[in-house]
Image 1 (spheres, rainbow, N blue to C red):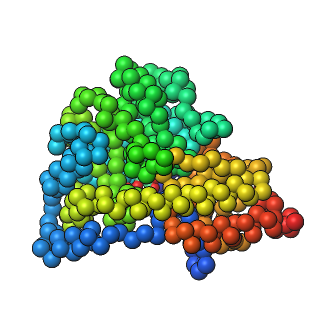
Image 2 (cartoon, rainbow, N blue to C red):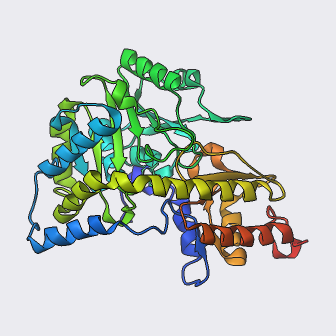
Length: 396
Ligand SMILES: Cc1ncc(COP(=O)(O)O)c(C=O)c1O
């Protein structure tokens, strides 16, 4: 039988896609399943891409990225985080996802253990598994004041074979944001043990009630094994453009460039020119976008928490409501049912690791009117039925 490598054959398909596929062809579904909103990319970013095309910037670029874009990323990091980076530390990637994959390709050998703080977006663990890594989950705990990480649990999970610890803060799906103390403790532990600390920072600018999330790479020296993965998708509304970057120790520059060559021979050239415009001009748009997310967060959390049997905490960052449904043991079945019967697309909690079953996730990065409509539909659904029943005849 023709078959792919064992690691690939064993990977669980993305359950969020499975829900979305179940709604394929349905015309009236409000899609809150994926991590993107309905806000189009700003005109000055699109214009920069059009200009680059008109100027025939359509040829191969260096594998580490367009020099102007690497410099714009350096300038952005200096401006926002006060961190002066050498150019060698920056690799441009075709998305945050590709950044994650490149990092796993660069670091993970088959049998290496990769510790992932969960519930987490599934692709971090998935990329480690593609490389033959063994994923060890450390669950966040849900307290009255929100999701918390017990760093001692991370330390206890790390053994001889641990090669990397992955954290995603602000987190998709929980909205958890690491605090400075936990970040410093993790960095200190990884430093002493020679373990890589991989930070998925794609939501680093999307925070509430504070200016910015702790950015662990700021606390690291050039030679520390700390990596930051970033993306244009969320902060600059560029999900479909596929553009991101990695900040890594300078010693990884060559490895990441080689891997970029063998994967895609570099991200799309005119898209990289658009990335320069996003970084140079995008800051002015951010307050309005964050204010809109803030408003949507209030709508989503207030209305979801009023549903019967539903509990949900206030996310400190990112743009997801991750809510628990009392008695729920098959979030995939319920998410499919909500698509069919309520016309709302949600992500099943089971997609986010062991601690995610029993939850559903709604992305609230939409227009407030759309979100209100989705909430109205969910209210009708939850009022009319026992949501944890998967059988039509058990409707009450
Ligand atoms: C936590 C996290 N990391 C990385 C990504 C990847 O983003 P992209 O590949 O669009 O840059 C996502 C996308 O949803 C995400 O939620």
